[in-house]
Length: 495
Image (tube, rainbow, N blue to C red):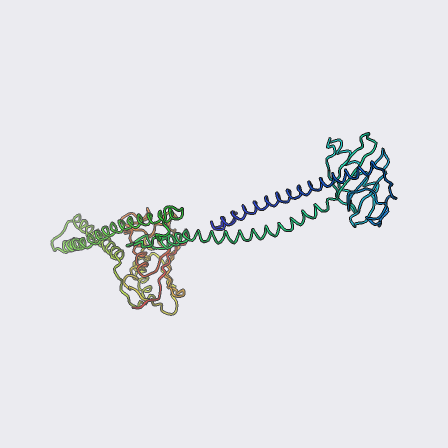
């Protein structure tokens, strides 16, 4: 599952804070390491001075007090040579330890035990094996003593080994204090960086938000039909070509200009086509009526008419009727497209359903017609003639495109402030590839293209156009054995 996407603002702030955190981490680690290195260098210098001083005392001779005398005064008489408080001094002559003194972590005089001496001796041997010479090294002598920085010196004849050490506790404590200071300071710096970067990013991206708001307003406009005027533009302050956001704003303005120009050209072309259809339909009504009238008049002649001529006249009359219906439908669509106002009166939709289903039952006696109406009459404000035509078209569509024996149910119900008219049948259904275009003009299935079916392909497009003109909509849901046309109309309005 894909993770939730983040805004550009959040990504920029996160990136800035992450980079700042990395810089703080690296600088903090470098600072602590440099501090520790400096402190250890100073400790090593003190250790060398202490080792030289103790070495001079050893060469001058001394007496070792009893080993392991805890609790003695560190400044009292008989103290062994050493470099100061917490110093460590071990002198070996051959295999014998002649001096073994250390100040423990509780600040008392003491000595190393056998295990600690072993650890110290092994560490000194490893340092000598590594050719470290007299370089100081670190060793952990365990509980009660701790970590020490140690240096090893030998007498010229090699008979005496002097091991001098100073504790690392001071270095460790100072390093910990530095870490304790740096960590809260780094966290506070991160918080300040996050808040500051968020404020700066919000301020700097405000023009981009305004550009996005303009694009959003334009995207919410209905641009698919009718006369369109795209008045929204990005403000001049947000179209500076010297900035990236300004370039986006300028490009959006150019796009809107091009789009408005194209929509204007499209609307003008549609208007010319609609006017042509309206004019042609209007002009065709008269000659079609004449053709139909002459055909009827010829059939009423008292003189006998040959059978072939009578059949031809019947076909002329039938085709003129069919063409007259097509012309009337085209003229109605042209008027609806032009935005001609509909009649606004109170319509009893229940009575309209009763009348149209009754007419459909008479025209399609091989179908079963069912009414599903509420007990109370359902009324709305609209054009009764156009609404009646919508129901006639839906029922004719069901009768024409379903086989005999199909049950067609017409239902009516109110849903809140809307009215739903449902025409459903249990026929073979509409092919899936035609459902998306079923309300387009001249959209017909292959089985309905014969003249015997009587379909012009305009019936459902008139249904959709009338529904839109009333502020409603029509939808279809079809599968084999169940097809539902749902016409939804608002009840609000004033006659």
